[in-house]
Image 1 (tube, rainbow, N blue to C red):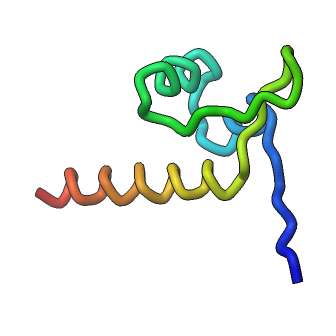
Image 2: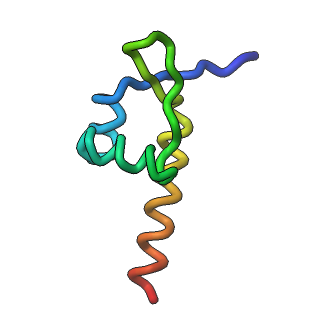
Amino acid sequence: MKSSIKLLRISDVANKTTLAKSTLWSKISKGQFPKPIKISPAISVWKESDVDDWIESFYSQTVVKEAV
């Protein structure tokens, strides 16, 4: 059975990460956030699982830094 893939638009990603859209684009250009999938010239999307993985990684790094 195939699992369904959920795609998120930039506003969904901003809400999920609590980062501003401009911060997301900055992180993307620096290689600090997953690159989007272009589904048309004006529409970029992210796989929800990629965003979830980034959030988990970011949280793990933040907790480790605070513990040290």
